[in-house]
Image (tube, rainbow, N blue to C red; front, top):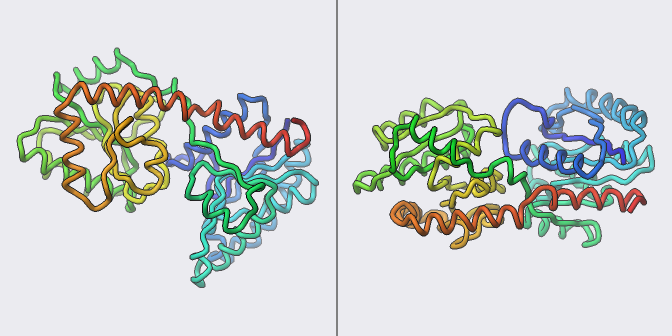
Length: 371
């Protein structure tokens, strides 16, 4: 089955790593595994289209080109990935209507508060119209499903759990031995964290983590911190780590996703607070390698981390509780191993992309009359 594919926020081969890019790539890989041929109909980025009039002529041109590309590919469905008010889909509804094929959105987001601002009202309306035009809107986040129910009938909404390829992050004993030797940590418990150093909640989460770990370090609790990631806030974050954790931290820089499994394998705990985290694919990746997670019970984190079973989640704003959760795992090896093993099993049972996103292939086939 041929499917026209479009990601209005940013193409899946965009050089900057992010959670949304990861989800999109996992989705595309799972669909390909199920025999769907994806044709990228357009690379037009509609980010803040509503506030950038100079993009409007480009949008009309991109729409015509997408129609030509989908027609040449003999597309039997149009699939849009990640549409919301900042990056509405102004291409998919038009192409699907012209070709008479089903139009589906994966990770469509609806929020009524955006209609209250002049800056976001047009983006809100464009996104709302694309959601209404869709034959099916699929989400991998339960909060988004609840919001979609305010706009769409139940028959046009589907939920699938977020998924990754668990084997890509399987525990690697050889990598653990080598990296821990390179880091010179011996038998010390190693905390691993990973994020892009963007000037937003990612940096706020890392700063929060460093502050809590600094408090633990001053109680003479023994541990070592390894940080994977890079970005514009690197200088600020390295300075903060040097202040809070002198002599007991290491920055690895940007680590390719295919090498993260080795880094996780060398750790004992994955800690990233996840302030206002939408979902957090990195939690699944770390758990697939057998790491228990310590995070905040905030945003979409509870959808990918089971409190008390695969990790520990603490209330947002309770600094003491977060530090105590980290300390509890650092001081109890058997508990770490038990949660880590449960985490590994949970990812394989509940978050395998082949099973979860593979179900999307079946939905597309049924809408196109092939299943």
